[in-house]
Length: 448
Ligand code: GLU
Ligand code: MG
Image 1: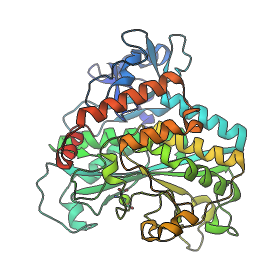
Image 2 (image 1 turned 135 degrees about the horizontal axis):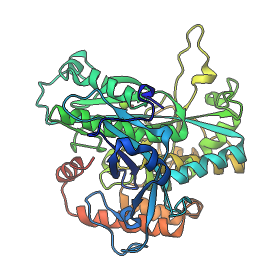
Image 3 (image 1 turned 30 degrees about the vertical axis):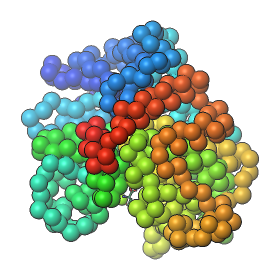
């Protein structure tokens, strides 16, 4: 919760508040009302339409879908997810709430990805005795700024953008996402935003909030902040890295064990094994666009193989280093990073499927996979096979086929959801079919 100075009362008659859902295309959509009426809307929600879930990123609705013109739903807001940004010049406050999608009685809709994440977290507590802590790191590129070139990671690269960085950090703080760092990245006009770890539901909400706020701040400067997985076929990718760690139900750290390989606790090792086992199917949700597969290639510091690594940026699941300074407690900072995600994905769905896969590993008591601390693409085919390293799907079509064949993963989701997801994604493939890599980048940059 943030911006407590305003309490619940928003007296400015011009201010709107919006109830939003971030859907399976990773797009945040919603409906607005006078912010002064917030208490009423928190009670009753706003209306929503089932077939909206079948919207492709390019606004055409996949047809057929399970609902057609039938049915009605509610967006029911989580008051604790409020983002309210008042520091932006010349615009009214940006004020929104993340929502669950429910039926008219307020019961979770079986296609609501935020409710799916909540149910996943409840299963984690029940079956593994663990609470999940998460954080999202997101990269993006500024398009349309016409800046002079500046060195990667350079102070100059950051100062060219003034006062974008400070305004963005202030806005993100007001939005309640606890931003940590704003940094110039390696790619052309690329930046990254990191935020503090939080309970996993809030972490997923933050993923969507950060994107919305960043785009709005960039637009004030006349730029497009693009989180698309690639904006140039020859450039670097924009990743969404999902950081995950666990505590027991009393809040004690449960991911770290200094005596084990990679310092992963037994339960975290089993979690990693479950993720690695199902990874080729998971990418259909976490790297879910046609463009995503231009990023998931070797030598991009993204992720191209099923591979657990320690401090290895070619590993899809990476054990992050902890500062080893006097007074620091590695157990509290220790976490794993899932790197095969991008901003075309719903952050709630992406986090949920990664957690579900890990939970399968915990339930089955799987052994921790071998640690791969070098570039997996440089290993011989024999070594890859011996170490259980598989190439991830190299196109969205392949990822969807792999998903369809993994009945453990499809078993987590309702029939309507799967029918909608496959229909929507196949429609997306059809829409962009035949575009050159450069055209593909351009097309996705208009949306992401
Ligand atoms: N840009 C890389 C990606 O697409 C990540 C680079 C990094 O490790 O920060 O995921
Ligand atoms: Mg980065």
